[in-house]
Length: 576
Image 1: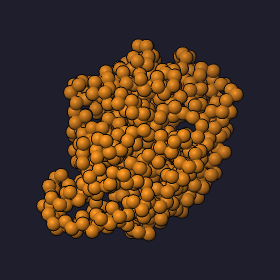
Image 2: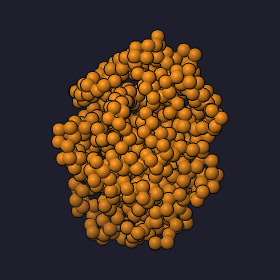
Image 3: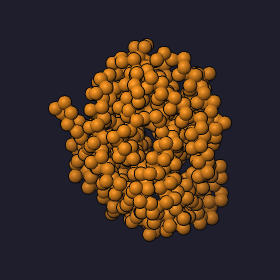
Image 4: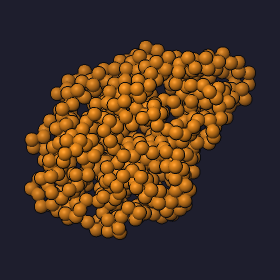
């Protein structure tokens, strides 16, 4: 396999102006002189300051793209030592060496007397973020943050190596997922046990890895003058428009308005299946005993059918997705050695999206590609923005793009399904939203507990998780599998790789449900409005981005309850 699996060339659409065209931006020896040149440049006017900002943005984009290419290459083959070494060079050498320079550049900007002559509306978001980054920066945290990044890579490696023997084949855990939909309950249980047993083999290793991460993150927060990592993370993640208390209110609203509905849905499933208790392997089988939904075979069939879906939503979206596929910017099939999960990463210099996932032929895979496609459309809409900081929005709105795109596809999945099976798919998806919101609250509340009690023991952590599972979880019978229930959180890669990042999915789901309402009422006009919001990137505060998309930035019970009510009404009208 090539070290860089991406064939798209740099500099064709967006030629470099400051960075030399032949510069290798994955080498510190190349980057350092360019950083020094920016630091040493005299700035004698507001126009010169803006030119300096654009040159800085270009350098950031070149470095970011090289980092993305190496990350993508590594996650596509976590068992390739050469790819791992190339990525770790960025993490261990280039990024730590560059951080003091980026800090000095922020200080140079903040101290520049010509900054007051810039358009304050244009630079409001940039200034707010830059001032916060400068305030939080501590040189002693660089090595700790580097170590945290390296530990996250170890999580990828551990999970990427998880395989089982099943039906005479070595399968990845994502490749097991389709078998959990089989109508034979004993067969489902066998498959579920295989996955649980394999994950439990690494439970202690992942507990130990997470403990090291918690300790590192507590030290990072302390160095920056915060009592705990939770309080540090909110400004560090640029959560300027809501607080820790808002999140806790959201947890309570979900507990009140969504968790009971999700439990009732599971109870209905138990009755429909004729079971005394519902077990973890009973959650995705069809309650009427129909064969599992198998909408495609192989990654190519998946993206070609999704292309038709996107074309039916909006022809421009179809053209964009066809271009992504045609440029080889998709890696969709699961295989041994591939990292878990799915993501969309933007190549910041070429300003193109790359989509990674582990497709196994299931209905969930369809929505995963629709989701990541939404991220890709967001990235493409904002690619004309000259400042890299404004080419991506805060995650709370970025996930509106992805979740909203999933819901725009409602009623348009005939490239995958018959009319009857399309209804089954829609039911599964809407029920999945009901399951997601309590899980988001549980994961976020768990992280609040973790980072405000950094000295907790492993046993205390497991007890805290179980208490939250009783608060937000379903009505499952875990008899005999209590150790796995205690460790379910280990499957959520965000806890390891993106600490405290997860509440965004809940906030964004509320935005996406509002987009769905708008689409039902106004059709193409709602899509056009959403795409105009995409084009703003991250240039405006979160409430304004939501407003541009036709949604309220509010995740109180007053907003949540009617949205959940409409979702439940839709489910009641759908055939089983």
